[in-house]
Image (cartoon, rainbow, N blue to C red; front, side, top):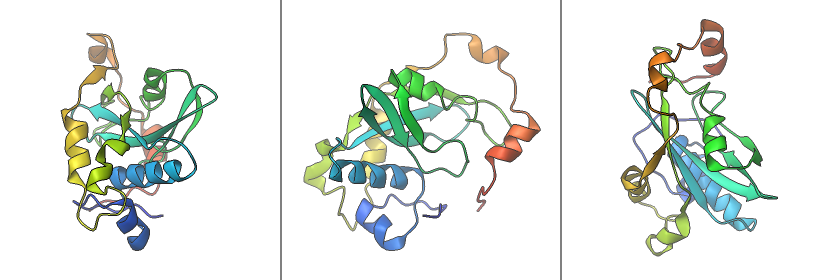
Length: 172
């Protein structure tokens, strides 16, 4: 399913109809699909400084966390369920999470958000945008990913990594 750049928050039903999605829409679509096969519909929010946040659908298998995500960057997508904690899962995105200046920007992560809390708002089938999910993700507490002071010593992403991660990157 191709990535699209848009100021939308489509429900999984609309994503299926349009056959395209961005980060939030891909994560809610994946959460709905995970629910269909027996997993709870969980989202996980990664917060960045000087960059956009990233939303993942997460699942637990055999006691380990994995993730499904849609991204405009190659490495910010799927993760096998091999991470013991949500912090480990978030850290797996750290090295390839950067802004267009090459700065490593990932700083915080949320706890799991069960989208069943929004069932009364028909998040899976609504014809209206589901901005209430994005707003909720912005309002909940997030934990720091790095210990205080570490960010001042971070290196920029090298040109080769930047080029590899941006294969297929779409610009407005």
